[in-house]
Length: 167
Image (tube, rainbow, N blue to C red; front, side, top):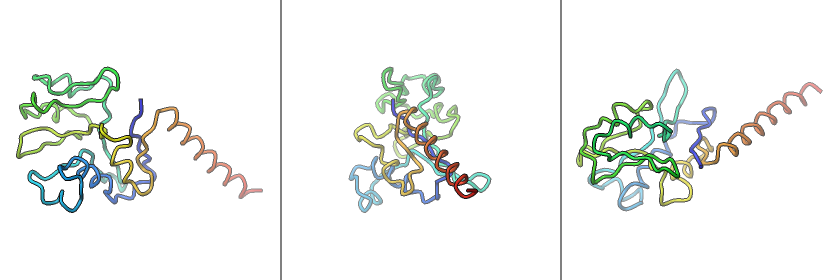
């Protein structure tokens, strides 16, 4: 299953991912008109600053998801095949218990409708909007083995550059 991986060394803090996420989850799917929608579209990932580093935080769709376990109405559920944790809007009562137990703090709320909002990996898209919008490939949508290969190749390139400088 593909995951959204984060290359922490690359994030510029531009928040393009946040904007793309909000627009993708808007009614109009257009940045120009999304800004005037009511309720305003909400992002599902957050770029935070910690110890001088920019950190994109997105739902990890935990294997043993605490948000699913705590949901008393069954609105939060995990697809047994894809592992994606999503919520059923019709069952959500807006108690926000899921947001309280999320270890990453990435479950937000749509105050106007008293519903939670969270990453759904842009299920209707081949590549999530946040990944597609990142100008420096901080976010990578890939299988774990493919991501590991990317990291190995980058490490090998860094080592080779250092080695060739000594020769």
